[in-house]
Amino acid sequence: MKMRSHTIFSAFVLALAFVSVAGGSYAGDKPLNTIAHGESYGGVFYTLGDSRYSGVLNINDTYTVNFDTSVLGSDKEVELARLYVYWVWCQKENVGVFPSMQVSDGREVLRSVATYTDTKGFVGRYDYFSGVYVYNCNITKTGYLVTVKNVDANGSTFCVQGIGLLVIYECQDPGQDCHHIEYWVNEGCDMIYAEYGITPEMATSKAYFDGDVERKAVNKAYLITVAPSGGYVSGGETAHNRLYFNEESGWLSKLPFLNQLLRLLFGYGGGVWSDVYIASDIAQIGVDQRDVTDYLKGTNNFAAVQDNHDYMMLTNAVLVVEKVG
Image (cartoon, rainbow, N blue to C red; front, side, top):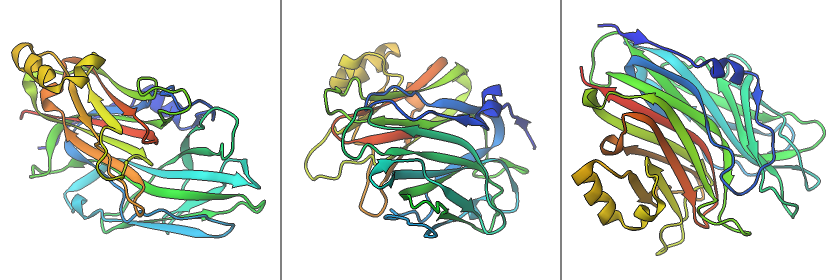
């Protein structure tokens, strides 16, 4: 059985040349944009491959990440493959600049289709740009290798936190990893940090998944969020970041038992989770995939990520709804 009803927003076409202007603040002032929304008989996966923090890349230095794409097998076709290069600390002589990088996959040099950036938004030391360069890519099913090279002859440097690969695939035949799905792909760059007069409520970034969902036809729903630098690793301390899904009443997030009771009795209340991002010195990108089936609404679902002295950039939010049948 082959099923496909794939719709890309007109905004996705515009995003091919879209550049998000640097500048902003530590507040959540740059909600992620929906660049793709559609239905398919298939699946979705996101991976960082063997990403690790690059350290400083000087002119002609390279950084490589390998991705395992064997999940695609011979019976799946790629519907959308999106590559994300997460970079920070781009500077020349202690002045913030944008990185000049060449990204290739061994077969071709990739062309950036979108750029998202943000800064802390006030004058001070180390006010360097951070951001994401985005590429469409033609991945192979036997593995995929990506190389980033600093090509700035003027001497600027930057660091790569890692590279993410998002794949939406379509199945030619029914299988264990194939479902009738509807998906929303949101991306951007929103730097959030509850410091310097910014409260956690202000340091909250949102992603909206507009449209209607027939809840009776839903088997499962899950949310993927990506937050470079996210993941407070100091032992014993909690609530340095929170993830919300369809939670509109902030006070309920502080009363999880009441929130759960209201949801069970009246279908009211969203999901709230603390410290969902885990980081290390090797992988400095927080990634969370979470079942949100119980909190799905019939229309206009949304997610929010809140910083509480962690510091992070929210860059990706993908909602996938698996339907019955």
